[in-house]
Image 1 (cartoon, rainbow, N blue to C red):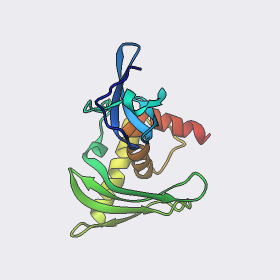
Image 2 (tube, one colour):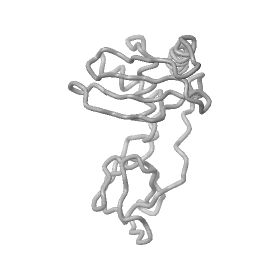
Image 3 (spheres, rainbow, N blue to C red):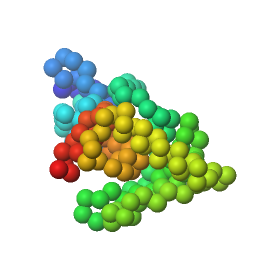
Image 4 (cartoon, one colour):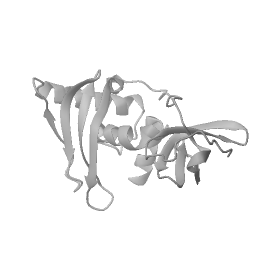
Length: 181
């Protein structure tokens, strides 16, 4: 990796960055930030590198586009607030937006109980049903293995934990299914 002295002295988890490795640009996101040594996960999630902050620069290079499209592409997650759950369960609160507009609030206690979703403002239970339908469509579009269920929850996990590292939804669902066998 080549040094880049004009860069910030600190990078935070989730920052979109780039570096040069063996003469080629490599894009990804910071997994472990700091002002000394940081770790970047390259797009696709199959390679990680660690090095001094000065080896990386902030990047506007876009995330790779997930090649499979579905109704879930209209949805996004904002105001994500993680907290400690039990074992390796994901615990969080977040806002679910459709076409950039806040629609739903989701809460997961990290105890294996599943997501609790409630409508925001003038939104209704029909909007919750729309989100669940988008999750099912996402699973179907990705030819999700039969042993998977809870696609709206899996979509949230993918969106927050894997998508920032350029991991496609299909790769995420295959990995998740292989762990549940």
